[in-house]
Each structure stands twice: as C-alpha cells, then as structure tokens.
Figure 1 (cartoon, rainbow, N blue to C red):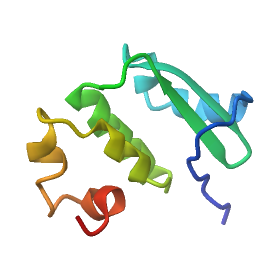
Figure 2: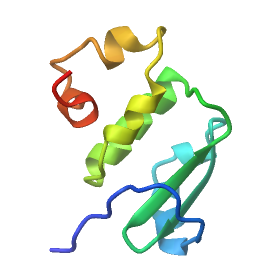
Figure 3: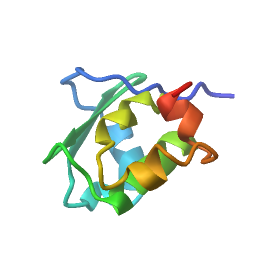
Figure 4: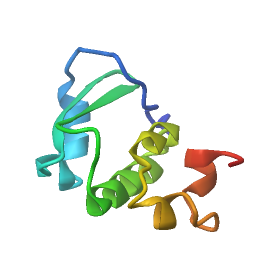
Length: 102
C-alpha cells in the first residue's frame, strides 16, 4: 500500500502529480483557492483570502480526510460565522483531527 502524502506548508516547488490529484476534487477551480503546489509528500494550498466559504471549508475537510492529510492546518479557517458547525460540533468526524482536545 502506498503511503498517503502529508500536508506541510512552505514548499515553493510545483509538482504535476499533486496538482493533478487536487484538480480531481473539483474545488481547485474555486474562487477561494489560488494554487496548489506540491513536491514529494508535501502539499501547499495557497488561498486568495484568509477566509474561505463554508462550502469550500467542507470540501477541504473532505479532501484532507480522503487523502489522510494532517487536518490541523484547517483550524486557521475558524471564525465567528462557522464556529457553530466547525468547532462547536465536537461529534463531527473531523473535530479531533482539526482541534485535538479542545
């Protein structure tokens, strides 16, 4: 079985396989996502703004879950508008992976 990639930031090198994999999800064309870069086991998602829509955030959660990526970086998208379904719902399948013991 092939090891799943982890998600780390800061790698400026582009990789066709990572971009191709992300493109298959459909949200790469999203207004919120500017670019996906990757090399080896590293993926970097570049966003046009610091906030993403609820729909885009749900797609990101699903993508990270599907490919076994570290979901903790998604915590940065927590805000007053999405806290009810995103953080306060501690029974959600993503809660522990994103927020740990909070």
